[in-house]
Length: 397
Image 1 (tube, one colour):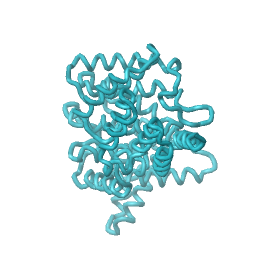
Image 2: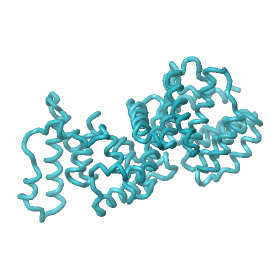
Image 3: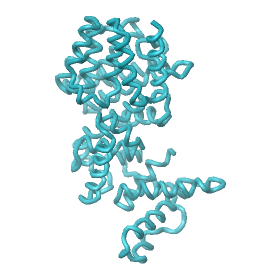
Image 4: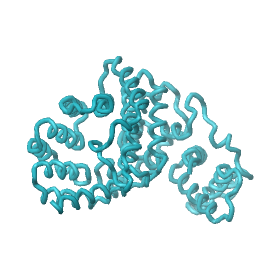
């Protein structure tokens, strides 16, 4: 529900415990679902019930907890929404506020992002694990430890002073990048139909809050360029349409121009970073809407630059695909073979890339096996339909 991030933030601030905030909210929501008709002012009602549920949980956790202490925490009657969503300026958004809180520098960078993805975006642990290319149990442990760190270190649930914002920026940008990656992979919106738009909105807000930070502008441009193609990513049969098969005439040119403006602002700073390079790659793709073709040599060069500032297996895979477009499938496959396979054991894009290049090289049986490997990862419905159609077509050749 739309009010969830605001309510979780308010509960977290009240109890200073992220686990308790989530558990109490879920308990209140369960009560709400048993009601015949939804109560008026549902957000305030949920907040009031969740606080009571939180006290019940505390009582169960500690037999020594005095009833008088618990009663002092309970406020009779539903809370007014003004109390739930009140925020100190200049961050007029509860989800963004909680993002700043979860990204406290006392927690390791990637763990901060994982925690924020769980608490703020509501992504399941299995999805977060795939984004980090690790197993679900390992990711569950990371998030559990992060929550414990927040609790044990007494990390405040207040918005930090503005002077402390920059030290949280890297984790915030990583969180938004990964959240949008999850939304992008979920082309049909099965996970959360509103997630893509919400992450785009938050990225734009961060760009407004940090206009002097080129990487904040770069991320906003990156996400906006990817979102400019959203309406063309699903076919009438519900299957995903790959970028190469989309009609660029139907892409959102206004979004492309907005992204170009952000990227121009970033470039003026002359502090090139990975988000700016990734945005430049997406802008090169977007130029097909204006020029009718893709400059693959420019894209391959940009991936070379990205490998220098942010090397990683997924970047390596995408670079291999760009090289294949410039120099042929065989050279692309050679680049893929150089990728550390151990780091890609949970990476569906690796097998999809192999299938694409193997098909180009005329090795259809090997391509089918690669697609079978990709399908084992249970991709979202739109991608699954696309991969299955592709596999079926290969079996008929």
